[in-house]
Length: 444
Image 1 (spheres, rainbow, N blue to C red):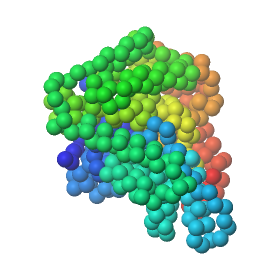
Image 2: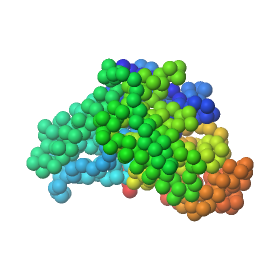
Image 3: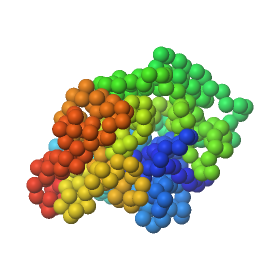
Image 4: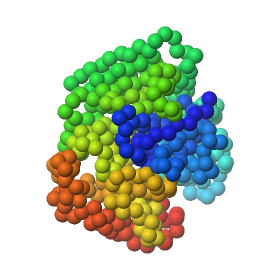
């Protein structure tokens, strides 16, 4: 069944954000049981819409292929590991050419160049439809976009074509197929029997309640989720030096159970919301999907507690994304992302940070994505120039009623516009010739 839903604050973080409501919906794309790709767009009121129905989306929202890292919302719990090409030939033809393409795709994945890697992997299959490694990694990328049918197809082909050199990966492929079946079962409303049963796990920092059916799928589910949250708490403390004063409540549901429990709350379909606790329609297994979401949302919770709100949005979102990306072992921004910002500077499309302090609403899809990326890069600059005590003091000053300009000036000796100029100068230094061909801009 196709679905359409909208949110006023949440994920993807490039999307326009309206004022936080008492019960504020946020979107967890990776938990979707959709068999098609997710389309997103922002309407004239600044509301972000998501749908797995291509007929519901405006034309400009019907392609997500170039969304890159931002669409990599779900991945296996062991990351993007997989088989590697073993030959080292130098010929530009045949097997050697395919091997070089595969190694290039793996290097792109390591740098977070998701769209580029996916394109290369599909090119490999045009040259050699039976190349097992390409099917393996395309299955991982399909899971990242919630395309479970595509995951199953690539994994089944992998099992058909994998040779003896890939025998160690066959058992893992079978486990991944079983995990995808678990996702489908938890999303099936006909499989629900009886009332929702929540299992509780408490410690001094978190109060977690887990749908018992999730525990049946993965016996250590609650323990692993608590591990994610404790890791988020530790990482955020190391990064900005603050922790919540009260335990944070988190409730995790199977998809069908979440819909049955909360569909009446909203006039549109959601798969997550915040009402003093985080409620999430969770994937069947606590993989990188859930880990990244919890790191990101935990950071927002800490930001709100210290500052008393969500503003400035560019600082809030920048901190949350930086912490999430680092938790996944990724760089804060990729070279191609910074190259795109370099072009924006040159053509006058850079959006001043003070214009996205209140919200990202009112921007087009493209402008909102760039505003979000500028936030990530700006916070990366702040992080490189300050200590953890500086960053804690920055947030505390905002919470005490100082403007962000006053807080920045106290900590860094510059205001928001000055920070803008410094960040642009850093990007110009990295790309002194902005007119380089696209292939050179993407080169590591």
